[in-house]
Length: 321
Figure 1 (tube, rainbow, N blue to C red):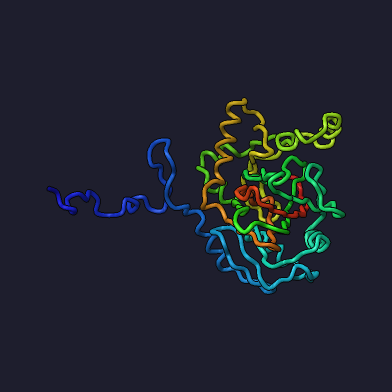
Figure 2 (cartoon, helix red, strand yellow):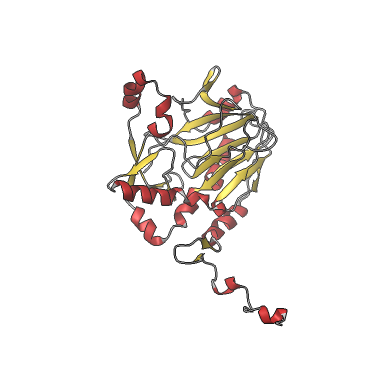
């Protein structure tokens, strides 16, 4: 009979020979191992200090909970400027206990730029700049897919401010993924392949069924298909980020249908890696402010049939380049 010691065939942790790099379990299998390329950004964010508020880092490379600011009060210019810098660093900012009226919500978001009016989503009463997401047993949540907002626009959102009006006790969290880190984590050969590629984005994928047939031609003329780079350069940070998503991207220009679908599916799955994500658990009157150019988001649809009411103000951005 063998002893316990006789059964052991390894003397060290099998990861000891892999160093700080990812490794395939088998040819074509899953990748495992540390996302070592996140270390420098994680350390940089951990070193940041702010004059007008406190920031608690939540994710490896994105997400910070901001305290010491009352969004219901008009912030002075220097606070808005510092929040803008923090947004560029953390990519998404979270605030607790912010009982915003619709008017204050709009006023705060407008400090960062012109606001959008969304043609395909219901607005809050009296406030066309606010989109209202009111989900319950009759209106289910279908936002549970990774996406940037409104990339079907020629000038997609710069960012968005989302306020939790009423949320369930459990469920309905929102996940955010760092699309800089996603791009930087791709194999060098794939990054090289993506350079110079562009993709078609189209509102019809998500909203086509909601447009009345007699208004389809008019709506298509107002919102034609647009072409954006597969990898864009953030206009303020200069960093490169993956910029395709399942909700609005239709095809890659210049590739046949099969090749385009295969490459897009490969890219769409990259934000699924938990190391790229931060998860925010909502409470009533929580607020999230994200940089739509740097992150994608995913609203977990795990609260049905409970009610979840959110309001969003989106800030107009530039054309991706």
